[in-house]
Length: 159
Ligand SMILES: [Zn+2]
Image 1 (cartoon, rainbow, N blue to C red):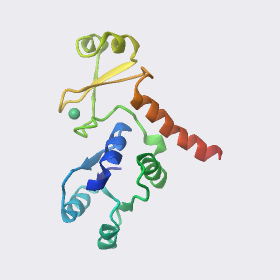
Image 2 (cartoon, protein in one colour; image 1 turned 60 degrees about the horizontal axis):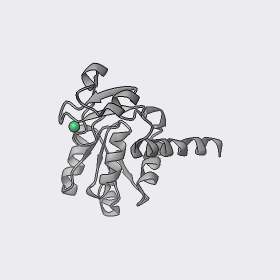
Image 3 (cartoon, rainbow, N blue to C red; image 1 turned 45 degrees about the horizontal axis):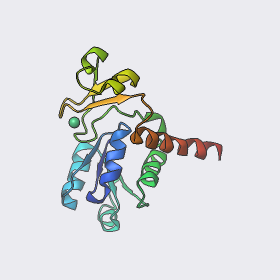
């Protein structure tokens, strides 16, 4: 499942990418263009705009995002489309929306700090912007936020 997010949903788009989902996002775009892209590429249109929801009433693939809070927004998307099992953190570039390619530890040596090299469990690189990503240090702000997000699901199941 792939998405296109409206201009108000930059943070949601970024976080869905962090979790591994394919999300197109433009800081400026006409409603008409967003609808066209969603239709042409078979993407779900995510929007906070009730006007856009009314305008696209006859289209199947769109979702009104209820909350202003990005964590609530992510949880809503994962709940509505049953995507909790599809979460693959650090598999997609948060800037380019491209799938990352694995990098061997020996090659990562020249790309990350010694601390990261020692503690990370795996490395990957974006073919678009050459940004390096890694998993398994459990110290970063982003990793803590990912864990907090995934906690939500456990709460929903047990509660
Ligand atoms: Zn990139």
